[in-house]
Image (cartoon, rainbow, N blue to C red; front, side, top):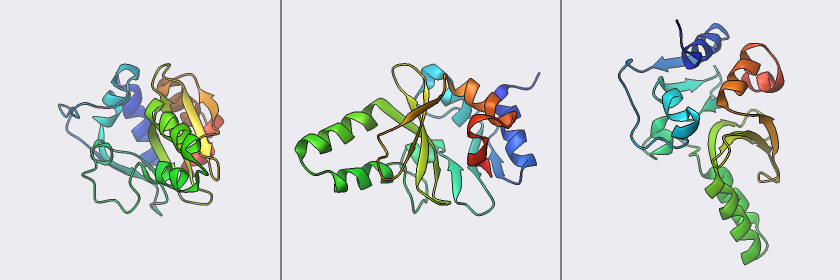
Length: 159
């Protein structure tokens, strides 16, 4: 039986995404969000983006800051830190990003992201200009993948 992450990768490949898969035995070291299945997902690919490379799922290399990326995972956090008006605002930004692991980013229009809330596993969606003003989009990673495969919820992020 095909695992859900593999079905999701198959879905993305069928919709024109570049999907560079890992070998079945690959396991990222110290994967963020491991308790919620994110580490297992990260272990399935090394590169996952749309044809224009304007929408992508972060890889294990992105999280380790070893990817050759012009737009690292922490860019949105850094934009918010620069825009913060005072120390309390900067601390609120840091607190948010310490509690959320980004899993997807888009620069196809407005900058936006999906992240796993570390305490609950919920998936949240944020968009500029207030990245930290998020909304819940799925109860967990599995729910997000199922909704995207079925064309519901955040499937528009895959276009």
